[in-house]
Each structure stands twice: as C-alpha cells, then as structure tokens.
Image (cartoon, rainbow, N blue to C red; front, top):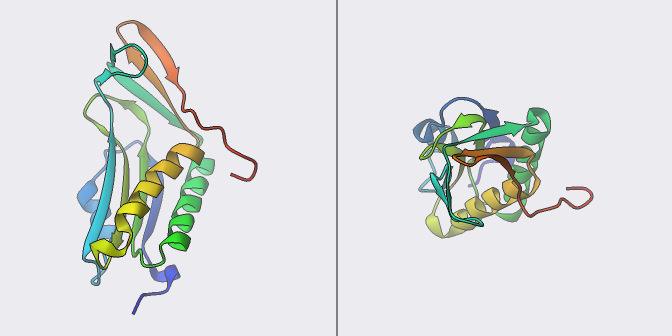
Amino acid sequence: MQPSTSNLPTIFSITESELDLNDLLEQVTLTSTGAAAIFAGMVRGETKRGDAHETEYLEYEAYVPMAEAKMKQVADEIRERWPVIEGIAIVQRIGRLYPRTPTVLIACTAAHRDTGVFDAARYGIDRLKEIVPVWKKEFGPSGAEWVEGDYIPKPGE
C-alpha cells in the first residue's frame, strides 16, 4: 500500500553546502523503496557551447524564497504525474563552484525501477531548469559572462 503523499519525504532546497548524495538518498528512501533514479549536474571545466572554451569556475546565485517555492512546485508536479514516486529530493548548490563539483541533485525513489522513476527524475531536472530562478556566471581565461538558458517562463509558471 502506498503511503499518503503527506507522509512521503520531499526535500527541496538551495544551499551553499557541499551536496551529499548518500544523505539525500537516506532521507528519501522508505522501507518499501527498491529503486532510486538520480541526476547530478556538474561544473564542466571545458564547455563546447558556442566556441569551445575553458571554465575556471561558476558563480551560482538564486532568489532563495522563490527558488524553493518553485522547487516545491516541481515536486508537486512529479507527484501528480507519477503517483507511485515515494521520495523526491531537489537540491541546488549556489556560490563559487569549480569544475567537477556537483551543482544540482535530483533524486526520485520508488518501489521498483519500472514505475516511471527515471522519467520523474528527468522531468525534475528539466523543470528545474525551466522555472526555478537560479543564475550562473561563468569565469574563464577570457573573462566572465552570465550564462543564459533558452527558456522564457509563461504566465503562471
């Protein structure tokens, strides 16, 4: 029997702390959990967007109250689309981050791997990139530039 959604673990946060995958998994795993799908976004040291270039570090910023509200919205959307999902973690790191550092973790757990858990995690990162107000500035040998996504929110998003 599936626990009610109010009893299911849901984490959404903006943090300056190092992301701890094991801790997050522990928080979103139930005794009925048999599968976890995880996405980790990393800082690249080499970027092929536009002209290939080196990245020394990124600086992430967020409007935390709105970002966390939008993360909650993403989690709610996941639960609506995939009611069998047990745990959800959506965590974005901000501050100065260097290549090979995890910047975002999305984890979804479920009883089985064939329940849509992979699709739910993919949806989580795609929606985060669409609607959560997080910005990054890229610093490299040629200077600094804000990196813009190509999504423009629609009314109500």
